[in-house]
Each structure stands twice: as structure tokens, then as C-alpha cells.
Image (cartoon, rainbow, N blue to C red):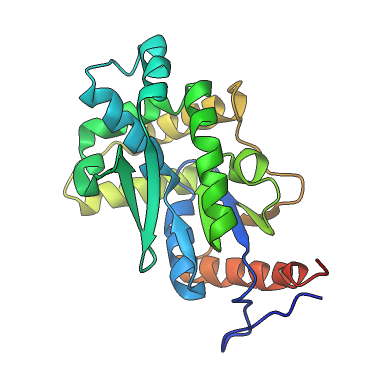
Length: 242
């Protein structure tokens, strides 16, 4: 039997495990994943930063994000790596730490376009799985439990109604001093949901063994508590015979 060491909260520390959080845009996946990672003392894998790194490379090489052939050809010429120090993720491109360079607004558009290219997703697949093999991790996205980490010990599908997600986004933009249009935000979210769920590559859907968590009517704190309880209920499965 595998001997499992637990911390004060009773959570397994010695055995490595992976938590996959999937769900539609605006459900709060990243916020939840970061909060849980901090609470559980495991690594939060920012998959968005990984795609941003490829997008950064595409821009640096003067390739359009719409040039699929050009992007695919570039993959053989670059090395993308994620490293973790004190629980924080740092992205490297060809040995250079990019830091905040990948957070530029322009890079967001490149990241979105390259993430839709099947060859790019395949290029990054093994790297993401390697991270999970070497660390206890929590990843969020739209295909983590179905494609990236199908063997994750814990899978959560976080959702909320389109209306609730639109309202959260609306309030977030208001806080930034912007003047958003709620109806337009709602339309865009519904269109994004349709694209994500009907795309040919890694469509958005719950894994067969995912636990569904709807946070339409509950706070972030309550969502974190509910997700932590799900993780607690699943972790004993990590302590099984080798």
C-alpha cells in the first residue's frame, strides 16, 4: 500500500495528484483554481500563459495569428517550457524567461488564435502532462479533464448561467471604470459557449467522471468550499495499492 502523509487539514501531501477544472468562459475557473492551489499548497498551472507563450513567439517571428501554416512551421523551431518556483509559474521561450511580456494585450489575440490550431494543442500536450506527472497540480480550461489530464484524480466542471456570467463580467468592467453594454456581453458569452461546445478540436464538455458544480447563486468563498469538499472526497483514491 502507498503510505500517504497528510497536512493539518487532512489532505494528502506526499502522493502526487491532479485536479482538473473545466467549464465555460466566465464561470470563474481561474479564480477558483488559484484559490484552491493556495489553500491546498499545490501548483496552479496557468494554461492560458502557456498558449500566450506560443502567441508571443508567433508575434516575435512576424507571423500572423491567422497564418496556420506559418504557425505550425514555427513549432519545430521553438522550445516552450514552464518552470515553478515557490509555487509560481514562469514561462520560458527558447531558454528566456518571458515574465510579464506575455501579458501584453496584443498577445491575448495571438493566444486565442493559436489555441484554435490542433497542431499547437498537440505540441503543448506532453509538456502539460509532464508538469502533472512531476507535481501535484490544479489546471483549469475547457478540455483539461477530457483531453489534457484524462486520468486526473479530481475533475470538476464549473458552470453558471450565461446571464450570471454576463452580469459578473459587466460588474468587473464597471469597476475598471469602463462603460459596458450588458446585453452585448451576454450575446458574446452565448456565442462563445456555442463555439466552444461545437468546435472540432477538444470541444467543451464535462468529462464522464467530472463532478458538476454550478456557482450561479453562490459566492466565490462558497464555491471554493464546495470545490475543496469535492477534492477531499476524491483524494482517498490516490492512496491505493501501487
